[in-house]
Length: 371
Image: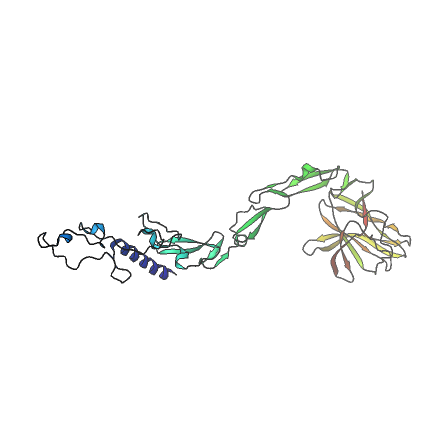
């Protein structure tokens, strides 16, 4: 491409020089005007009366005073004048980058140079060239989108997501933040009072926390007075999925504390048969998202009446604030499953043997009482 533009520039410079000096660039020797072949001066006595001081009719007016004849040039733009614009046809956007009042070269269209639709024709020292637009890269003839998001060259805020677009990108603030994506400011969710009336809201970068006040327990969104009812629960009520029974598989239901509490009893909603059951609380293994260590389990005899059932722990179990645990139930086979048809979704796992399966989700039921 550079060699071609260099040759074009040489041809162009030669054409300009020829136009300025009258050099025969067409090879037809017709660069000036027709002059008489015999230039010997005649005296008035020897010359016929009608030819004295006669000027050749086909000679230009300035040829009789000894000046150079006006050159003939191709009239590319059709304006009847030999001028600089004749280097290119009219409309080809001549450019004078060096300020010498002469056009340096014609544009890309004149030379048949086809730039990419995502490039622009620019004037270089050796002629016109194609250069990819901002947000694109390549040789000007083929331009590929630059993925600023992948390369990390974007200017999105650290709390915003970057989305690549053809030749550019967009920024959008993350949840919990507000702004134009280039500058994001934390939203103080506590101003909207999202927590329980008996809880304290604390704003955090991009989020918030709710913790039940002293004397209350729960997840911060729902707090109950300690000793007045269940302190930890899911789907606490009397509705249940009738006819759904257990197959003897141990079930672990995941929950998180708000404030630090001491649990004295956990119950499940079951019945239809009798036999020995166990309920307990296990710690959480965050690396596997599974129950880890049994913190306390009790055995109790199931009643065939479908209702909330369970017994007090031998030793109350102390749970830390804002910590994840599991209520684990090992039921009698064919007993009523402790779940309802619709309700709050609980993450749970099943265990048959030594391995936990899942996780799964469903409207399982449990409730625990605190001291």
